[in-house]
Image 1 (tube, rainbow over the protein chains, first blue to last red):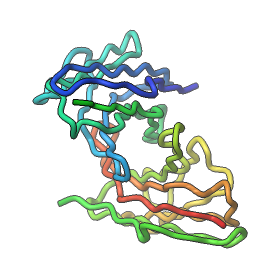
Image 2 (image 1 turned 45 degrees about the horizontal axis):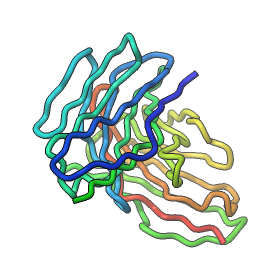
Image 3 (image 1 turned 180 degrees about the vertical axis):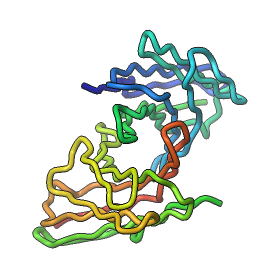
Image 4 (image 1 turned 45 degrees about the vertical axis):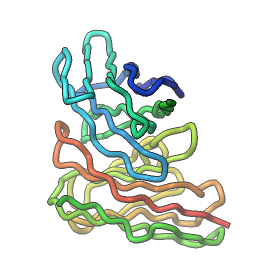
Amino acid sequence: GQNIDQPTEMTATEGAIVQINCTYQTSGFNGLFWYQQHAGEAPTFLSYNVLDGLEEKGRFSSFLSRSKGYSYLLLKELQMKDSASYLCAVFSGGYNKLIFGAGTRLAVHP
Amino acid sequence: DVKVTQSSRYLVKRTGEKVFLECVQDMDHENMFWYRQDPGLGLRLIYFSYDVKMKEKGDIPEGYSVSREKKERFSLILESASTNQTSMYLCASSSSEDTEAFFGQGTRLTVV
């Protein structure tokens, strides 16, 4: 089977650090993606991990552990504009099937 | 600039109508996807296609069909629209399994 789990909602303070977790169970695995989606807009790509470890990209970092079926997105120096939903996604099984978790809605407050 | 274009931003249809949602990408991508997004449920995969004329069911294909006659165009068809198909529909495309997907702006469909 296939399953991707994320927390539904998180809140954090401007300037702080927040970690959004994602666990997955899929048949076949070709890497994990993180997307950001602001309300009323389409998702946009943030990061891709295929090997274990941490990938850093400015204020955003993403971590993957393939053996644990676990990833997290780390957002540093939070800004109000980071208030959005964060979606993790994997290609599952054969034939390039891209599936998403339900998303984590992050609210950043002053 | 890469682009995925959906034919309509907002659509209102009557119950029982046949509805066509069109998606065009200009990046020569192999893979194309149709999702619906509902509050609390995230993006759920309806159908996807990895090549021209090839299609595979996603997780919620019931009540939908698709067509991919040309590489750049992927159409979602609601054979007989029902009120429970009121949703935001998102199309996406990608070149392979290790590259990101690009999304269209979405079509908000209301079935009355």
